[in-house]
Length: 275
Image (tube, rainbow, N blue to C red):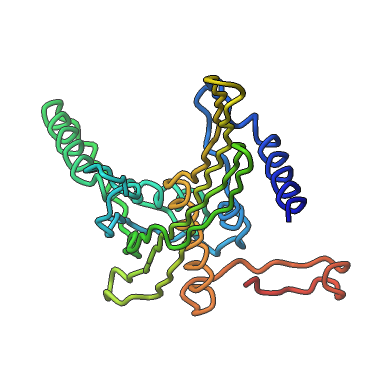
């Protein structure tokens, strides 16, 4: 039993040494562009559409009403990002399937157009402003669920004042998205996605009397938390991928027909409809 305990402690210490660099403070870095996620790659790898569809997003917001869970502290910081509409518009602009038209800041656009008209009238300018682009589809929905501590666990050991522990926590966010026909108000298709948010914490410490009235103590650790807005971004991008694929299956919109090479299809000039 003692050998087993010693072996387990050595294993945990070696595991802690492999992460010792993470306990050191990082260097100051410059601002950089957000890295592309796996879901973004799925969005960009979708087949090309027959044509881009104008869509509008009036509000795609947090509907959970959840605040950050902080022990023994009253916090007014929300658990998830309040900028989901901006994330969705950004994802729409990255794909060739949709052309997002501004609706969240529509009042600002109308105000600017009034200013332009007033300036044109004072200058006797007969040039008319073009009409605003109309949308054929409205995207509705939002972040409808945030469940914290859906799964927790950990592992640790201590022997003669030397200890190591690792804890993890898992949260889940859920997103619903639906496409609504502007002319009829019919919900054309609706999808739902979830994303797990992982948080990991590792600690190691040494606490022991080395001689009479002399105590040696050391402690180190680190935590790794997935950024919530990145998780929301991935869930929105995944929902958009599912929405496009669902529309293709239902015949709501069509993808371009592609021609496969002979080596790929086995038949020269074979034309298939991508799915």
